Image (cartoon, rainbow, N blue to C red; front, side, top):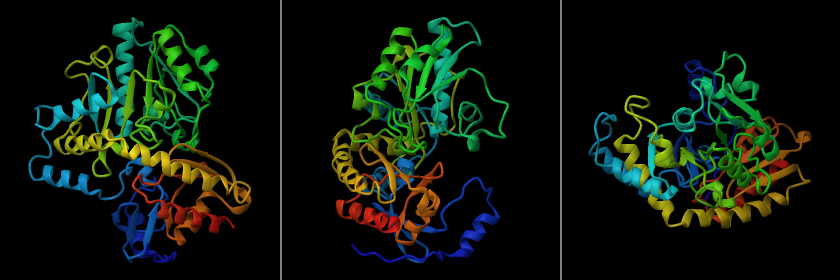
Length: 406
């Protein structure tokens, strides 16, 4: 393993050029990346960085995975876009493969995670009116505190994060928030007008917040008993990240709607989908929902390859095995700069001792040592290595974290 020690002087001209012509809706680390392979990225000056963010799980299979790149190249030479006005030859295979992976009848392909969440909201409301019999315009959806489902105006309207919410109202009505992980509160929030419960089985943006054991089973039981849809936002948690195909699998729970994205595009193109059975997704009729790029040939080709790779279980096993290594290493840091650790598979949230600085400051120090990670909510750092990372590189990355903390 060859490591080039980076400095903080990462091509300021490129950073300044980007900041001068870009709306400042992000505060990126001062690094300008030019190449990626596996779990490693290289900046414009040739310095190498271990990627411990993996594009918020969009890069579960690493950078430039040869199978996915070859699939994308082959499709680029044939057909990239038709719109859903026509059927293309990669569409049926993708929908069938993803539906089979989820154990569901139907697939509704979209592009981004936020689009998939919006789709799940629309489908849930339509189902509520046409199947459950909720009076018009009275449908309600229960959501959880600390949630992150995207940044559209509808979605931030039921966020309790002031950075996401403040200044963007007025917001769409119809959402009831309950504490995350509190089954009793969720049950109490259900009314005759409730059509769905929308939750993340693990809250990623919140800092890899894992609910109490049995919570997902309770959600499933409550939804079944009350004739309410269970929509699981597996956009970050799903597709191998936690050591299972879906995070819901850890409790043997099957939601009515899987909301998927990020890793579904293999780190190459944005691909998302809502997956459910005919009695739910079947409520949509032509003209009621759509997307110009949703289910395009390039997306379907790459998505099909992703599903095929997941079908072997190899990546889920790697996340389980390496996740145990990661957890053991991180647990050893508790009391040595780390206040608490939460993890499942190759996904971890670390609460940093405020005496050592903010999460952002720790990430900046990690960058100086050749490791890229991301902070959230001030004092928390999220680690989400690509599932292709080697154990040697994983140890090296944690070594750098330990050095920064001491």
